[in-house]
Image (tube, rainbow, N blue to C red; front, side, top):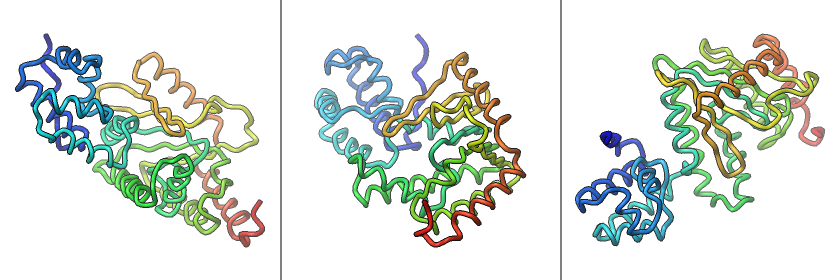
Length: 284
């Protein structure tokens, strides 16, 4: 039997919960399968809880606390985990992002989080309240987490970041014209950095392989590429090499169809001048 994967409880509250759960389970002398049978849930979910990849539902956490004699410790910790600003479905992606040596992003609807200004990010996250995804306080917590993620661009050396933006991203007014003008200016500044490449995919290029939505490809040290697909309130990681390769080919085609970096910078400046230098009432 392979040795259990080493846990690092310092990486997140979910990881701390998982480490605590494993410690209690081991002390009880139960395997993951035995504990799962007692809940009852699949033992594979116990494994995911312990790895910090998934947070159990509240009733399952309460049952685990009871079975393992945690005296409320797991229940208390569960409350802190659920208040963290990064949801379960994004947590593994964020962990991969922090390790990546290169990141390739196609964005169909918005500026990628790593390149968002604070006002732009706040406006994007505030839209989530329409779907019941948080109070104003929770939006600010998510905003702080998103800004903190941008620290990966300050690593030494930083990861390579290649972004292809659909032209629609430039025209969709998020937060108002002043916010958009600042955001586009920030994109120009970031695109001038040595390890950041920014391309614009204009409408005139017509149909393209990224029409299904935004996609991120991460190159990880020693383990190839993983792909992340994000929905309105969910996310999917594609880790199978064959499937990831298909997205990599599609991304190559997107890069080929997009404007080169220097032309993309000119395109950005023109949109700033034509669209965001006019009074707000003139925007359509």
